[in-house]
Image (cartoon, rainbow, N blue to C red):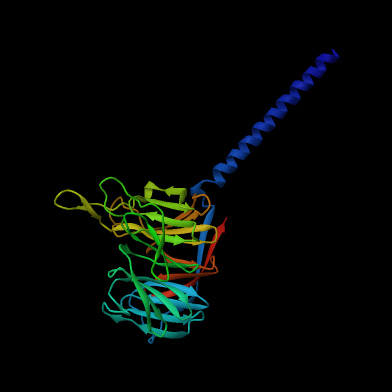
Length: 343
């Protein structure tokens, strides 16, 4: 009789224990479903404007092509007026450099897309149409120049080297020293069967081994680490592939229509901030422009939200200084406070 009672107690205790385990597993699963779902809005983004550059009658801008922050100065390339504006971080204008039009030393075409700051007194300016990089002083003295054999679209100065992405069929980024000598090639191009040279990718370079690139042929972002793919993010719902394609008479693809695609990409602290554009979004079935937050270590999408205009921004000093380009109600640059909040 004693053994029977012990047996019954044991069975009751075991059943109770199993019930508690089942409940614990259920609560754990519920936590992951609610807490980790992309639609659960685990992350959010908050943007506050701190300072505006180019908002007075003396510093009127027409079209901002590129901007940089270096050594407590804000540099803005106005590709419409072919000017470079230099401000203090507090918004006081320091200098305007009016660039000359032409093809000679120190002259520039209308293909001005990007530049970077070599030092307080030296700028490296990329001329897309002339496929040339020129070094000039901030007093507008011509210093040197060199040509490249592909159509460039951006330039980054890192550790005495110039990283130049562009429309090359051998690599996405070529690396030059300041003498104009090519010293390296990074990242294989996005080439698919019967496709032309890659259309311009959005690129941000964290350092010489961590590079983030948008794929112009797919709704895709890749992180390259030490010249190998660390992760690849893709979201077919964004549907950024433009159509129709333009074909030559022999049927070969020459270029894709640029009515939608990736607008911007930059690294901010532990995140990649990307934005899209879509000029057709008001048509039925088309998605609106979006801003995306991606974990830079894993490639996981953390947050996405529709926006009225593409979010064109960049961060410097690992997010300590963040600037956003805006064309409304007039062209100007804003210094912003960018907060990514985990709810």
